Image 1 (cartoon, one colour):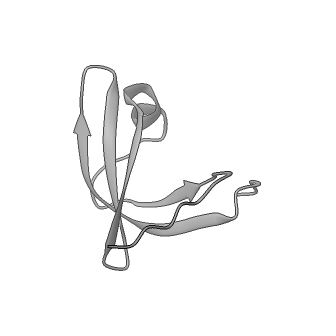
Image 2 (cartoon, one colour):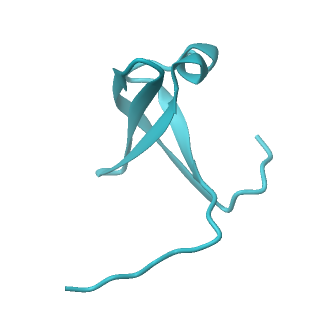
Image 3 (cartoon, one colour):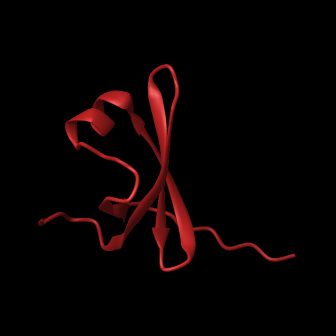
Length: 68
């Protein structure tokens, strides 16, 4: 896989929650969980399912930092 995004996190799908048009896909990345909102069509096209390995790809122009 070649893409321009620099943040590619490999993990395991732990849950897929389907809504009317959008699914929330949770990926365990070494103990941390990343949740992606993607279309139900994308879930079907990628044949995503619980237990399958997948990549969370993060591409953003800004990263914010906060403190308490």
